[in-house]
Image 1 (cartoon, one colour):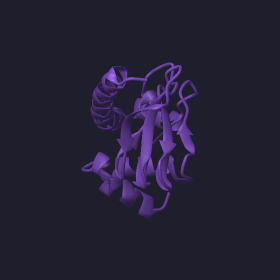
Image 2 (cartoon, helix red, strand yellow; image 1 turned 30 degrees about the vertical axis):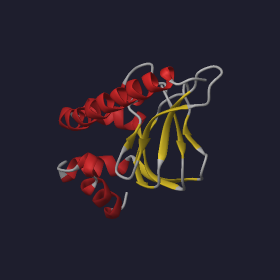
Image 3 (tube, rainbow, N blue to C red; image 1 turned 60 degrees about the vertical axis):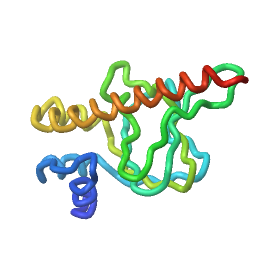
Image 4 (cartoon, rainbow, N blue to C red; image 1 turned 90 degrees about the horizontal axis):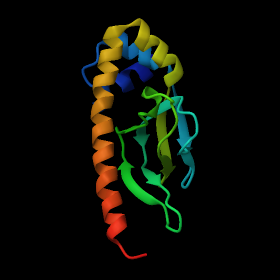
Length: 154
């Protein structure tokens, strides 16, 4: 990957402070992707082989319940991460993620990254400690939104 991608990763709040050699490894498994309004980035139940950092735009994290509109459990903005399902077997998406506006993301090949994490415990620690925070925040948000949705009349 280009130095530009390594720079983007190094200066992104999610990876802030990560050593340059580890940022270079992350850049080596990344590319850029664009989404149109309404386009799904990930779909619940499908294999989770990637994760994403929003560079521009807005995504909604959604769940579906029979007889209801999708429930938005979180919104993901510039600098935020989409996807932690790639870290937890069976590596399947647990939510949908949909573009609310035109969106650019850094797309990380998480399958290849998992191999790097296994080979380099330092990288594994740096990435995992960041994703634990994402998981905790996302689950708290999902719980709040689901409780709200369950108390609203149909």
